Image (cartoon, rainbow, N blue to C red):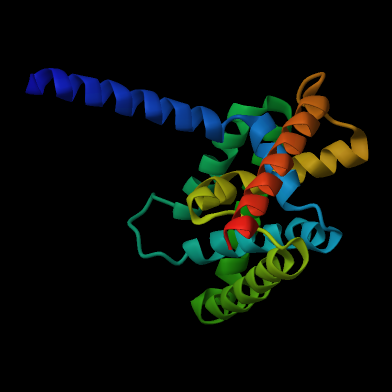
Length: 205
């Protein structure tokens, strides 16, 4: 009996893990959620302008981790992001991967030029400024933000979603025909669900 329970638990855990991975790589759902969380122009602009500096300074400080050669944590992070984005869309993902590799090369050159004494100050100032504005964008203007449970997906996917939104607005880019229409439907469903939840909470209070 115990063995059967273990097998059932293992199968359920495997199915749950696959379901979560599909959720992370569900580009329509991720993009709809991203757009529903960044509807106010100030919040949207803050994320579009400041996500890049956050990622760049993350790469910059990683060059100073005391890890044995030839392991390069900054390059590993850039490749991990690039691989994730290629998995959801080959064309925009390839562009994002090139941008990440370019950022890695630039951060490596800057780290060699500044050294740790100046780099950590630049990283600290940039991170504080950018994260402050991102939190203000959600708190003061958007009046909503991702939950703690959603933060890992946000950290992984948001840079790509920002790039995708820029490509869509400037060039009308879609990963495939009908993508934008499907995203609009999912965003409307997400917003209506959130409004119903907020209404229920207000009635309970």
